[in-house]
Amino acid sequence: MSEQALRLGTRRSKLAMAQSGQVAEAVSRVTGRPVELVEITTYGDVSREHLAQIGGTGVFVTALREALVRGEVDFAVHSLKDLPTAQPEDLALAAVPVREDVRDVLVARDGLTFEQLPDGARVGTGSPRRMAQLNAYARGHGMTIETVAIRGNVDTRIGYVRAGELDAVVLAAAGLSRLGRIEEVTDFLSADTVLPAPGQGALAIECAADNADLVAALAELDDPFTRAAVTAERSLLAALEAGCSAPVGAYADLLADGQIVKEMRLRGVVGTTDGSTLVQLSTTGPVPETHDQAMSLGRELAAEMLAKGAAGLMGERAL
Image (cartoon, rainbow, N blue to C red):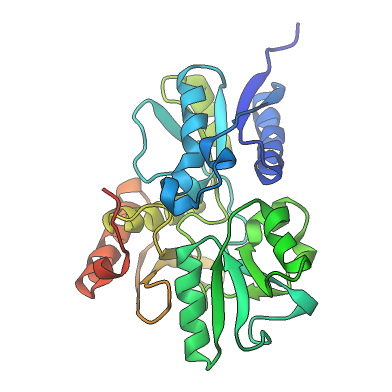
């Protein structure tokens, strides 16, 4: 008799289904059990309000977590940047697989790069973080752009460009890659230009904390370097007391000397959405070997950023 299928809870969007399908294959490989996708509609998927007004990207996570707690699904896959920084005690973050490309990308009309955008170009994004950094970069390079707040899935957002309503939209490279649509990118924005959201490009696999066998099986998919990096980034976000939709960018990368990884560098940025003021700092330390070490790297940089006035740039701080 074949083993019972594991139930994977996922949002219904094309992107969520694509990334959950990839995780399902990996989980099936390490457990030897079939995995079935269970589609769950979240409030963030049906609401037409702007994300910042309905509680940020955490609204996508709540329904999946509730299904886990009720036992309707065995595990769930989230985009890690959507996860609130506080981890519920009854749920385990069992695996953070190897991260995809962390960069933001431009999808523009006529194949334009960011530097080629005309004066006054309308650039769509739903992210205050992207607005702050794009506007700051434009100011620093003598460009004028208008950032336009948009919502919707990848098709909807790119559709604004195709229809001529916007000159360009900014999206995450990881999402387009998982959808098999990376060829639509007209410009990859370096992390030196636009720092990604904390956890961007990474997935989170979550299950009930008391299901020790499943926690252990899913842990096979965990990548320790990715976990250390996103832990540092999310610790910075938490220490700034900022929610998922705050204008905060953070990226931890590994600094190598030849083949030997020597250190982890954590960069953080907070800014006003018009780009007029940015607080951007970085710190470097030994590659964290424990959760606590990664957390302290994030907290230390957050303390420096707050000392430089970061709190006043974030609007309402998450409590």
